[in-house]
Length: 188
Image (cartoon, rainbow, N blue to C red; front, side, top):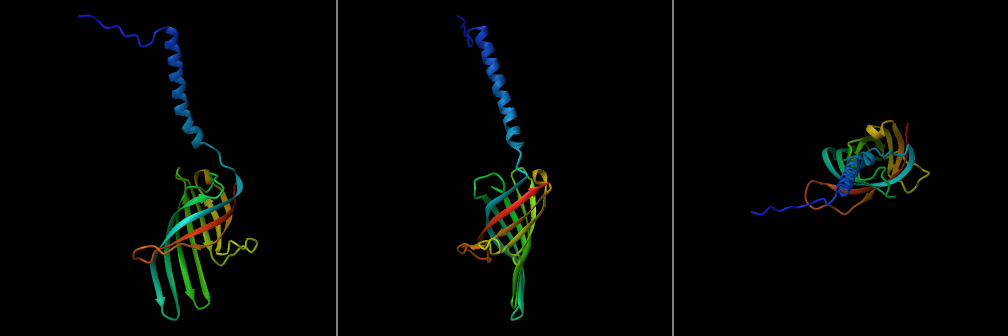
């Protein structure tokens, strides 16, 4: 039986080039994710972003002509309006208390934003706290109180607007809203 002689690499020089190319490719693959994950974020800025929310009523106290209080859960995602990384593609979850009693109508609550690394930003909000310098942000203000991971030490203020979306199909009194924010923040 005749043997078959197959030469995959014709010379020692070619074999060395192939080995160096493979080592270079392996180095790129192993270091590239670290470079992206370790990409520093700015320490201070102003960021316009929108959170696309679905609100779900959790519980209500309704006393006919006296008033109503409803707890709400809101979940959604963020979209940076300048296409930047800060406050973009984060998951958002909030709990709120919606009160309507006589002339008093407000919503207070707290939110947490989480990025794909699991780092979080926490804020409280109040619809009675309006930034008169930003009349288009006429729904309230978030106060950023802290963060974890790359956001550790973050503080800031987020005046926001409320844009009602079309009614959602189905039961449960769910509703959708886009919440544009104009955020001034700093990480110390």
